[in-house]
Image (cartoon, rainbow, N blue to C red; front, top):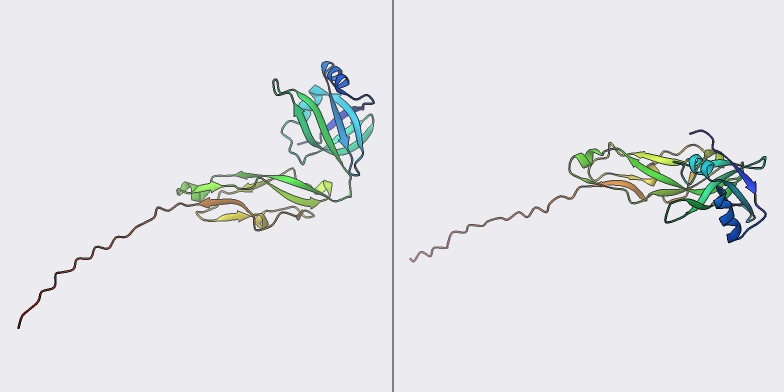
Length: 202
């Protein structure tokens, strides 16, 4: 995926009436939050934003062009209209190059495990992990190949292949994927056939 650049405008007016007017004109109101807590009110083209952020993850860094000033940021959250799905508002979280950050990265399990083909069941109890790294090293997502996973085998967080410079925060013992094999309880019944005792009289 190429670098995503979103052009936004500074927004001096705020409030619900202003937001409604922006939406009628094909714009989306938004806020960019900085690392130190400051915020900037902006607005951006609705079509450009909707098309630009398709298929990105929560840890995809986008370029936000604020009237010629470029900022690296995450799309922190979007608010949608429950009736038509249109985006009503967007929040960005600004990141700074050269300063380490902590972020949660989504984990995607791929493949058909050997153990499932043998009758087991695949379970994937966690869907994201927390890491610490510089923005340039932050993965958009982590793909876990479970094709070779056999019955009663598991992949743990410590087994994930992370790029150099990415430090794991989530506990390494947490299970990412496991194939459980529910064996039927085998009840072995032993039939004892005891011959009746015969008393012999002298």
